[in-house]
Length: 242
Length: 305
Image (tube, rainbow over all chains, first blue to last red; front, side, top):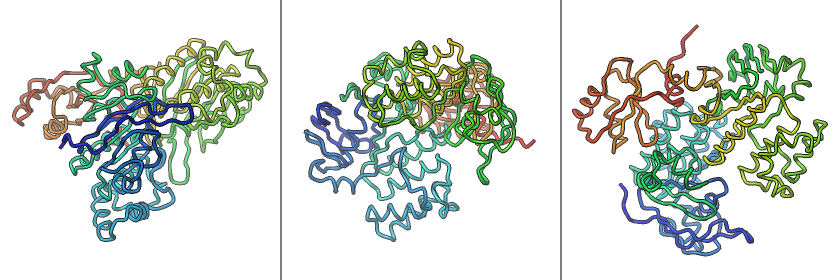
């Protein structure tokens, strides 16, 4: 259920590395319960912005809140209220499925009983119960990514950040992954996602497109296609980001 | 020309390649399409003589990749999936290094890389590790080309690269192909298939299909429909109840419905959806995309031979 209640507010966000302006005065809001697509070319400044919103990097200036907490002063609070998964690193390959879950449950300070109940439910949903003692490194990529996502939302965060979660995943698993995203939204979690698959941009409630450190477009996929007179989001992206 | 005959490779119990045979013609731009873990990298590493097959054989322009491996390396250019240039050397130093290793100079073969290298030449004194993803990719391609190879092997050059840079990269490959270079390229992006002369769909160590992209699309054996709806999720759930339906998948703003050949008409599907309370639906017959073919073949139970 999408509301107009913001869970992320970004006002005049600037991040400089020396003379280089990575984020050049960004302004946007993400509403509670929406799937917010965060697109842009390589080097446009997406990762910099995500790192700031996750409390991992300090902005140069601006007023930003995530889940109601200030990104300058309350980064620890932010970390407790979000989940994060990336394509590059998500789980410990040398730990088993169960050990990874226990580890992350511990990091997020979950109570043992709660963690156990949620673990059982999650493994059942992913049909992974028989594999709980397998090392992560032995699982196919698609399984890992679905598991990594489920672990990222195990502690019921307000927002989950997904950085290219489906890169390199087969077309069937990619769609199953999006079903998991929809289920998370049903539970009231807000989803902030980046992707290079333009068909996935269509699955977002709203999409922002970054180029050269600025947000150059932000609207629903439908309105963006109308505005840029494009048949699909791929065309919109090629028209804007070039 | 690349000829692969019954190549088999296992890592312990895991079969990475299961008796794969394949021919890439002289001057062809050939795409190996499949997800991570399908066996693309293993095949390429065997062709580059970096890995030995358990059984089977392969030749590159007539040279055996096991017995003539030294000669194979001289006539091939390779871009591994992971960025593998020297991050502490500058752009120009990397290129010079690769030219020297192969006993040539940048000047000798500059014409070959000119189009690509010119785009990163303004940064030639920058260290390779400090380049953006798109620029790294252009430098890696330049380094793979600097000894004027007859065959190029590119392992997922566009993975993690944005849609604009990906398109530019494929334009570069087309120009290289026009210069007569045989190119084998792998990608997990199904939409890039149409840029290739021929493609192979690979999954779990098996080639599921090899054909030109249009022929592969035409080979789709069942009926495919695109369905436009305001409520993708609801309509998809309704369609799952359609008797004898084969699959329904979301493709961006549309649903793709597959039904057995000749069983349904557009009106019949429309009627079914209306009965299920779906409104404002637009149904069209459509030609399959490569991704449709891939999903179809993945779902098909393996025929035991």
